[in-house]
Amino acid sequence: MLYREAGDFKTSYRDDSQTFPLKLDRLGYYAALAVAFLVVPFVITDYWANSVLVPFLIYAIAALGLNILTGYAGQVSLGSGGFMAVGAYAAYKLATTFPEVSILIHILLAGGVTAVVGVLFGLPSLRIKGFYLAVATLAAQFFLVWLFNKVPWFYNYSASGQITVPERSFLGWIITGPQTSASAKYLVCLGFAVLLAWVARNLTRGTVGRTWMAIRDMDIAAEIIGVNPLTAKMTAFAVSSFFIGVAGALLFTVYLGAAEASETFGINKSFLILFMVIIGGLGSIFGSFAGAAFLVLLPVFLKNVLVGSLGWPTDLAAHLELMIVGALIVFFLIVEPHGLAQLWRVTKEKLRLWPFPH
Image 1 (cartoon, rainbow, N blue to C red):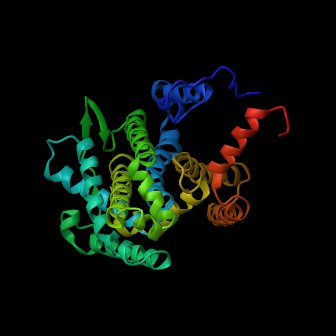
Image 2 (cartoon, one colour):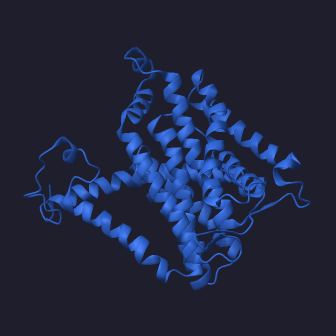
Image 3 (cartoon, rainbow, N blue to C red):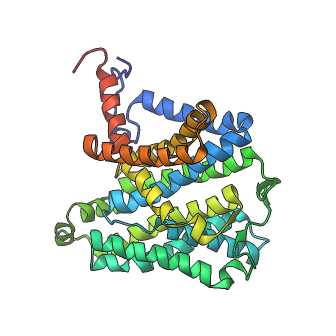
């Protein structure tokens, strides 16, 4: 048996309800964090940072935010790309207006601005739900992208219509701009990902998370037993939008360096984050990271195999990538609706009994 539970006793409710109840899980988690913070920054290259690790961490934060809203609170949203645009443009305006303030503070403030915008666009959820709410958030996506394209104030009246991040440093390290090192990009995104994952885990395990799940399972019954639908839904939209806004700010400031609303934060971005949540698993913190890793690594893998090894044209490989992603989404919806997170749970249960068959 790979999971050794014998002798792993619990003597308090606190120990019994911890995130990783098995000692082996805790050791694996601490080892992964140690490698991520103490080993990877010293061996990471520009290719691994720009193609794999940095986009994975940023999209994991965005998927985490959408999972809070859709997976835990049951509110369907198709406006994630628009909310990421709010975070990016808010970070840009704050960084150019208050250059003496740390860019990390601006990223958090951009998340706060996005939370306010998310609450405003979440007000229809008090009257509508399901498909109608999805259409309302889709309208928010189109409206926000149109707003950032048509109002020159948001991009400081630039002739190109693009926003470009100014060079900023933290503790002597350049963390934004073209001179940023791969390790600096990675550590900034990793710090935000670990912090927000810890916040999300504690929120979903507490009273707030239980009210979200009560609204998700049956809103009328939740209201009867004392759950306030207004508070529950608005907090879900606020927290979700905060996470997505931080992801959008990181995507612009740390990863891309320059952005244009319709190209960078179009409807494809909203669907990409939604697919991450579906493939990873609704209502799962781990599922958000698993879905983001899957949809970030899959295009890189296919490009290396189809273009690098087999010599196929790039456009053909891109079309095949879309077909494979679509087929996988259908596959997961049919075979395992709970996504990669459920597959991981089943695998762990099997490992706890291995080599016995049941």
